[in-house]
Structure formats: C-alpha cells, structure tokens
Length: 142
Image (cartoon, rainbow, N blue to C red; front, side):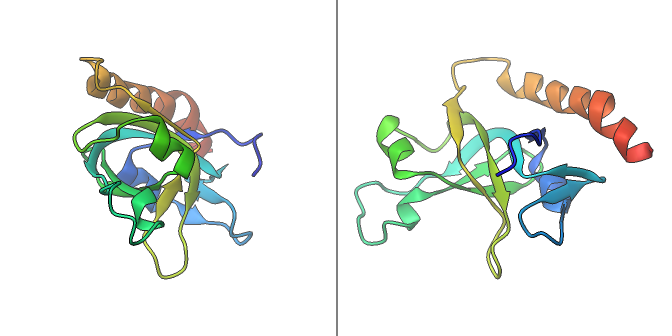
C-alpha cells in the first residue's frame, strides 16, 4: 500500500468508473492514481453476527451513497467494536479492490458512524464536489 497516494473522496458511481492500472494494485480516476477511497453512505445490508456458518460473509456489508452500492469488507476487529445496523450513515476509508470475478469492494481501514450528524449527507455531497473542482478536475483537464 502506497500511503503517499491520497484516498480520493468519491461517490460510489465514480469509484466504479475508475480504471485498474497494469500494476493491479492501483486505479486511476481521470488519470489520478489512487489505491484507497473515501466514501460515505447508508449501510443497506449488514450480516447477522449470530450466524457463524460463513465467517467471511459476516465481514461483508453493503453501502449505498445514492449513486450506487459498494461492498465493504470489515475486519473482525471492527465487527466487535460497534453494533453495526442497517440504516446507519457511515464514513469509510480503505483500499479499493476489484477481485477477479467478484464485485468491487472497499477493504475497510476506517469506519465511523456519522448517524447522529443531521447534515451529514448534504455536507458529504458538497465535500465531494469541492474535492473534484479544486483537486481532481484541474488534473483531469490537463
């Protein structure tokens, strides 16, 4: 993981439009190289933690930001930290991965429950627009 590359603030639809680089560990969004993504949205699918049949599936969540849905993969330590429930509004940062033959996903390095903040969604849209106009668009147009 190259931590000199910024975690891009993107909507899920933008994230899914990014292209994988030949190195297979990075992606580009309009020519901007990245490995990690920062997204926010509602948890629309949270596995039942009481079901121990498939440990891997207990770590998989779905997040909807209003533009698309992305799969999240949480480590077992995050599963123990909070009571994650459907409908929570969360901020997520982590590596963006597109495993062969599987859906795109974010392997969560950081997740924060922002449900208590009333303006969270409106502010997020403004943050993504601002990041795009100030940082991404000038690089894309060059």
